[in-house]
Amino acid sequence: MKIANKPQQWQVGLILGIGVLAVSTAAIFIRLSTEVAGVRGVEFSLFLAASRLIIAALALLPAWKQLLQTQVSKSAYFYAAGAGLCLAAHFATWISSLSYTSIAASTTIVTTNPIWVSLLSWVWFKDKPTKLTVLGIAVALVGGIFIAVADKNIAGNSSNPLLGDSLALVGAWMASLYLILGREAQQSGFNISSYITVAYSVAAILLLPLPWLFGTGYIGYPNLVYVYVFLMAILSQLIGHTSFNWAVRWISPTFVTLVLLFEPICSSFLGFVLFKEVPATLVLLGGVILLVGVAIAVLGGKK
Image (cartoon, rainbow, N blue to C red; front, side, top):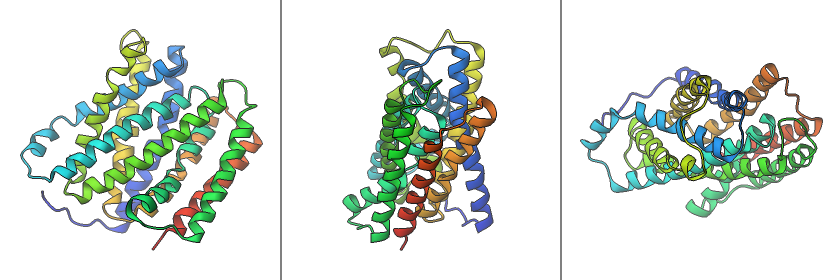
């Protein structure tokens, strides 16, 4: 594969900034789709998750020609396929969480993946976390408890906050595995184009039948729903996710995950502007504590 020239720092920063803005729109498009369709729950959430990845995978079909003509180790395909499996599970759980809890709580909890990446690195790569990392994990978990307790009493769109928060947490675990496996795939020989082609395609295939299995499908929704899904696939997936996957090649994953901490802030701001969704005081406090804990954990693991 052709080796790309290393970009300048300002270019990496620009791509990461664009990635944060793009990823932050996902929660908004999901909420808008839910309101327009007039339905919610796991069935519709799986439709959104599957459609998002199917569109992204279809857009990447031309990349398969070059990929199949390139000699790459089998381990690269293995890691990329595993990442796709985790990506499918991540979207299925996280998108479902938005049907039951607030945007602020969901996006904040799901962004704790740096904590779980640190723990996975300890188990997988024997990369023992520092004392500062352990402290950060403890602080972040306290913040998560604040959010769970406060979210229990939130009304309105948050129909089952504890369930939503739990789904968001599982989504964070899956995102952590996705990140670890994605890094391994690229270290095993894949460039960014090849990696996302395999990972997004595997995720799309795995999610494809689930809407039917859960009693719904892909047709019959208002046209505006499909517009929101298309925008989510292009902005949140192909631009947002790919920006972070690309950046990991050039800078430390530590800094990439730190930048990701801006996602719940941007999503919550958009949620306030569009839906007048003001999180409870404990949710705000818990979110701040959680983000501080994540930042401490990530910085504590910096070599």
